[in-house]
Image 1 (cartoon, one colour):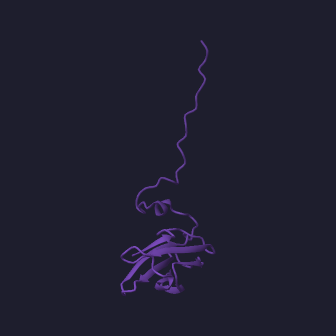
Image 2 (image 1 turned 90 degrees about the vertical axis):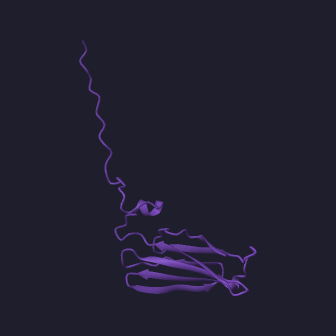
Image 3 (image 1 turned 120 degrees about the vertical axis):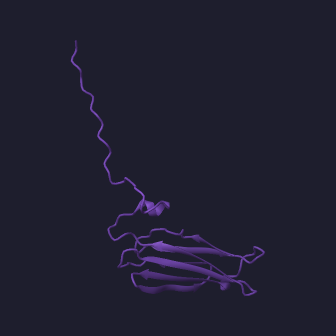
Length: 136
C-alpha cells in the first residue's frame, strides 16, 4: 500500500518554490517497505510537451516548481512501491502552477466547481446612510 503525504493533490505552487515530496509504502502486513523499493517519477505537463523532472528512489524527494509557458500546466508526481513478492502499488498527485493572469481561483483550492458562481469580484453593497431628521 502506498500513500502520498505531501504535497496534496491540487496544490498551487509558484515557479521557483521547492516542492517536498513525501510518501509512505507498506507491505500487506503494514510493515514499511525499504526505501530501495519505492520510487518517485515526476513529470511536467506544459501544453503539448512533457518533461521528466525527477525519477528517483526513496520515499522522499524534492523538486523546484518549474516556470511554465501554457495555461493549465501542471506537475504530475507518481509514487510507486514494489513489495518483496513483486506486487506494485502506486498513487499520484497533480501540482499546478498559478494561472498566467496571476489570479488564484479559490474554487480550485477549495475543491469547488469552476462553473459555480463565486461572487468574489463584486464590491459589497452600499449601506444606506442615516439622515438626521429635523428637530420638532
